[in-house]
Length: 237
Length: 237
DNA sequence: AAGTGGTCTAGACCACCTA
DNA sequence: AGGTGGTCTAGACCACTTA
Image 1 (tube, rainbow over the protein chains, first blue to last red):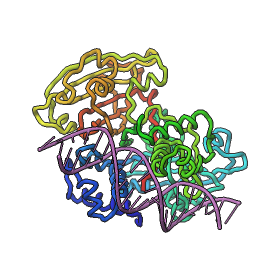
Image 2 (cartoon, rainbow over the protein chains, first blue to last red):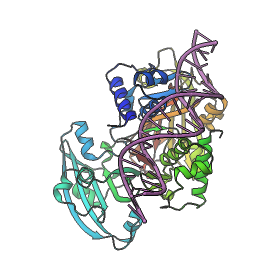
Image 3 (cartoon, each protein chain N blue to C red):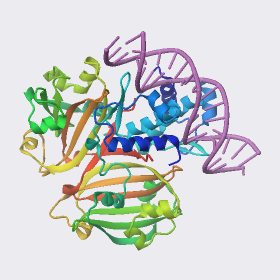
């Protein structure tokens, strides 16, 4: 919270959320804002770019920074949000069942996916997620043991991300995901309430730390009737 | 192509794609680059931020800009890519069948979705997409007639986006999408080769122009076995 | 200690929109 | 014409990594 432009960003988000600027309004101009916050214009511009990236405003040359309708831009499942953050946010009655937590040598496919040598061992964690009494998500995590040396059942029951960031002090910074639809497997039927569904939505993610090392591969299998993904795509030219 | 930082960005992308920097290498430092391109450091930083946003590099404080494995970061369906761009890119044998092109007053639901008044009329365009001999995508577009006054069958057969950007000179700038799985409809069965599938992947998009006006709502229905979505999520704090 | 990227400044000129 | 955001500069200091 010490960076000036982040403080300004947070201030402006607060103001927009408290209705001080309505959808369609323009914010004060960059010159005005740099006076108000007694900072340089470039710093204001950094804050405004953050607002823009996060869907709060759209900058229009010659006109100003137009406030968008933020109700249309909520992000229930976008980005890197973990299951725990997500269910906390939605205030849902959720539970995690841990099925497997163990270390193993990686086979070829996994070594290729995690981009690591034969010597590196891999944590395998399998969990199902229950929401409002139904087990609808199966998460299979593969995590490099040289980066995360210890995972216990109780860590897996809470949040592995929280443990990695808060306890180990590692910073998760970006992920590449792909979303597909695939047939239900025996494992799905064993651990989930598939309710007659024959297909599952599968999200495969490659997760990277701030120093650009790939440390985790995750397969997250969702029952299709409960799946939703929201994406906000701004064109970069 | 006139902006300095975009020229530098394109140069660096070229160099990375031509293998002058390998995955894991670090780029020259920002100071070196500003000498090489004889520009200021802030301009170099703009170019590097673009590289970072597009998954080419990861900046690490104290170390440098690490080149990522770009093979892992191709974006076949991400962002705002239109069907035409996409199929051109993949070099696939593709065809578009236009089923409906007409103007109508909007009903309540559509007026709410497009955020417009009773007076505004709406273009309705329905098209199916055939790839390698199979009709697998049904696109239903709803476009504000006050913004796009004329759409013909031949425009719909090519690319509506191309027409809007090149002929009308409007700039499409961002979109909010949601992805869901829903049961097959009669319309799907009429226009697509559903091949016994009972569910479809549905992408609903709200598309905005550069001046922040919402001008189009699209429902894109994909046969699940042919659906793929790729997402690159960088954490913003 | 030297080098890296991250932040911040106080200017400048430009392209675009609205009156 | 005056205001807006977009680009660019040439500095400065800081936090972090590595040797």
